[in-house]
Structures are given as C-alpha cells and as structure tokens.
Length: 438
Image (cartoon, rainbow, N blue to C red; front, side, top):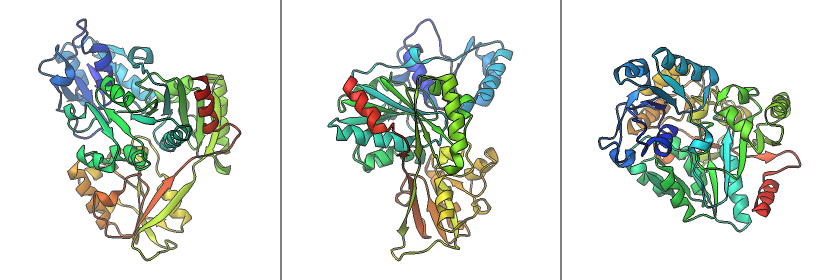
C-alpha cells in the first residue's frame, strides 16, 4: 500500500514497483488533496501487471485496508509534513502489523542527459518560485535554453496528465489546470519559459530534454527531486527558523543542499537567519548560504482610476498551499495591504461550501482567504466568498491572474514578490561556476 497525495506516490510506483513482479501494489491512499480518493490509477499508467489499474482509497481507512487487503508493507510517499506526523502514520501501520517504509533518492531519482539544477525547500511558502524564475533568466542570459520540470500536481485526469508541456497561458486552460497548478506554472510561462509536468516522469523528462539544454527542477511541497540534480539549491525561510529540522523531507533537502538560500531576511528576521546558519553548520557544513530579501510589490489592476488603500478594508487572497499545509497565517498579500494602509478583513462570514471545510481543517487561517480552486465547483465557491466579503478592495497575492478565472466586481490589486541577494555570493555567481564546471 502506497500512502500519497497525487504526486510522489505515483512516481515511486512508476520507478520502483510498476514492472516489478516481486511486489503487488494493492492500492494507494490519498491525503491533502480534495476529491482524489475513490479514483483509479489507470491501466495505461499502471502497466501490464495491473490491467484493471490500482484503486485509490481515503487515507483514513489505512488500518482497515491493511487488514482487508493483507498488506505487508506500507510505503509513505508524500511531503510537507512534520516528523511527528510521519511517525504517527508509521505507528498506525505497525500497530496493524505491516512494515513501514520510505524510498530514498537513489531508489527514485531519474538520470537526465542534460545538466540539472534543482530548486527545493524546507517548507512550502519559503519563496522558492522567485528563485526558480531567476535561475531560468540567468541561464538564458548565458545563451542556454533552460526549461523547468515541475513537481507533480496530479489532480485531474491522470491518464491525460501523463506528460504535459506548458508554453502559453492557453495551455493552462486546455489542461483545465487547478489554481494550485496555475500558481506554479503561470509566472514561468508568462516570462517565456516552458514548464513540463505530469504523472510519468520518465516521459516528462524525455519531453523536456528534447526542448531544453539545461533542466531546472522546480520542486514542490518541500519534496526532494525526481530527477538527479548536478546542483542542489534549497530555500529556507528566515521567519520560520528551526523548520529545517522538523519537517519531512525538508530536512533531507537541507542536509543534501549545495547552496541554501534563506529568504525573507530583514532587520526583524536576522535572528532567524542566524539560527538557520547555525543549523547548516551542524547538519551540512559543506553547503554555502545566500541570505536574501523578498521585496513585495503591489499594482492596481482595476478600476482604471487610481485608488488609495489607506484606511480601506481589504480582502486578502494568499497563495493556497502556503497558507494551508504550509502552516503560515499570512503571506505577501497581508504585508502589502498593511504597508499600503489597509486593514485585512475576515473572509469567513461569507465563505461558501468546501472553503468552510478549509477553515475547520486549518484553524490558524483567520483574516486571509487561501486561493483554493481544485475544480469548477470550488472556483464558484471562491467567487461567491469574494462577492460577499465586506471590503473596499481585493488584494490578490496568488501568482494566478484570478480575473481570468472568476468574476471579481470590487477593485483588485495584485501582489508579487521577488528575490534580492544580500551578500557576496549570488545566484548569478553560482550559475556561472556551475556552467564553467560543466
């Protein structure tokens, strides 16, 4: 039985078990992602040993399934969870009589014929995406043809998602991408780079290698890469020191890193930077460290007539994963709104449908609205919740252009954030060294 969340679980199956007659995979369990339980990993992906595919069950049934399906081994295969959480799942499996297993990098990483730079993190919401985008731009300036391979987000038609290429915003529409997928793909595509993703990463890698001469692995959910990197860059958060020791597999990334970028460094977070620096000396002394600011920018999208937010009430929409399983109570949207003189208001009095479940599941989320949108129904609920909010304006801090997906009748301000290195060592210098060695 493979425990997952629509990403590493399928990859681990593909590389370690799909054509392996020594094992029978009797099912996947699903967590974190809405509406994924009850589906089937399709036969065309599961391979010749599984002509009926493999069923996906709700994770809450794990103990029952171990007994009913006579499971010998439970393989844990998802990320961005605490070490304590992993051991609770292990204890449940062991109590039911099964072994509990984690597959490591050597067992699961694919080898590319192109140079590979990976960008991973110790937690969701560390500011990894601006690092990925900056690397792509640096590589392009060096005359390379870089492409990004994104950690999977297999939420829709699994068979149709085997290997995907996103090179224009229309590709996101054609593949009916969720908001979480758009949050990762859209900023890169908008800058003229191609993003590859899917379910079967041998096919994804082959497709990316045919177009690019350097691969940038854009990690997600603080997982470690599916493609073996030649240079491992890991992002930490100066506002969350200590998390590099407490989360799986973020600590794995931290211990493996060649370079650690510590984001969100300012006068108030210097103590956090120093704590992470001490942790690096203990856990990975060979790695180099780049402190970096995360400058926030906000622009008014609608209406055409300029509007001041000073003294106004604003509904703040933050990046979904950062606020939910990333565990942060606010993000760049709140920072920008308060800097402009606005007061964030609670979205929850008018929240609709599954968004109320989000509030129950993540009680730390108070005066922000996570950009949830795993399907058409959830998008409608998001639109309804925004419409009912008692606010003067909407501050959108998700990288997605929400106005393309839903109607927002109130004034809209979009927030973005970047990366600005603060020391001698820079990403440009790291890339230059890497290319010279290659």
